[in-house]
Length: 426
Image (cartoon, rainbow, N blue to C red; front, side):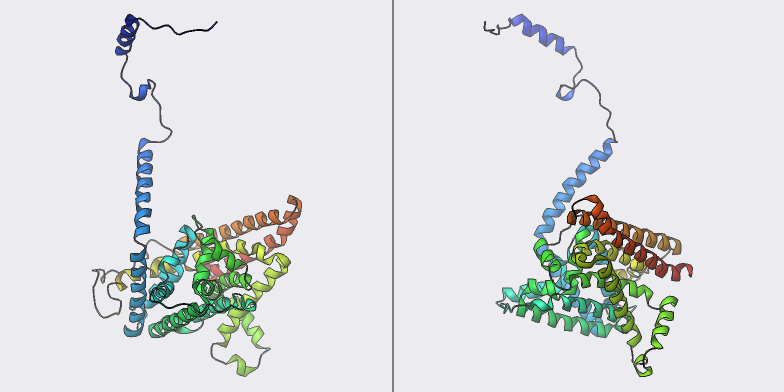
């Protein structure tokens, strides 16, 4: 039997309306109170920030040309300050902006938030302008045997200029170096194409692209990153990222001086007294030791485990340079108002002076220890995940990752000893 709904009489509707009229009004017909798990203000702030962030991202996309122009303008201002400004490195914009704000500060920004360097890269911007004006690359074939060894040499040379050769305290030399690298980069992009050049020789682009792999957004271009990881010299470049920062802390360390003196007893006197030989020897030796120890424990899986070293490279940057970034990085505030050291006050900040009251040796020590330990812990975790991908079961993966873990322990102890000497005097 089929059931058919019967129409309700009019008095039923009137009664229903009368009954509901006596109940308290409630939005969306919810009559019970709900206690939020967190304060309402958190929801309000969170929702507002999400909308605001969306707006920022939209505006950011539309402002890309303006940002690239501003970055290029700052680049040329830095070169001009280096070439024509005061010879005092503390009162010239170029040294502080290049060595502290750009190389260290931007590295940490990219490690945290992703690769913004393609947007700021003045050399790529210049090339894109030349391409728009009609210049076409020759697209010569890059020799496979070269791999990215040119980038490895450039990174080692950059560290040599910073630590060994006193270019850091000579603004004019820094300006000529920037012009030389500009000419080399534009020529390289013209001969081989921008993408090939920036994944084979442009150590700055490669360095930032690899660091961005651990960023919150991991915004590195996947095709470019793949091209880098498949090239010869990939492992050597990542180990150079570690070795150059570690050598910066090791240079002048009592333990290193003892080892150096012992080695120098085996070398001819004329070679020992060659200018900059000691620092050059030390930098190359540290890199080779890193290479040998890493290849010894990873064997045929050196490329597979190489990405796990990137968190350590970032940790070394934090441990060795964070205090300089915080203290010396403040110099840019007044140097932007007076980039040439000529007594200008373009932005009204020329009278600003850095403060170090909020940072001390205790803070630096705990930050260094935390960053180094965390960096190596992340490296071990990433390496174990890599081993699981390479092996058939967990037991095999554990045995494969065990030598790498032992190497990470050695790296951790060595790093802490190097950092501890200037702070606690070991």
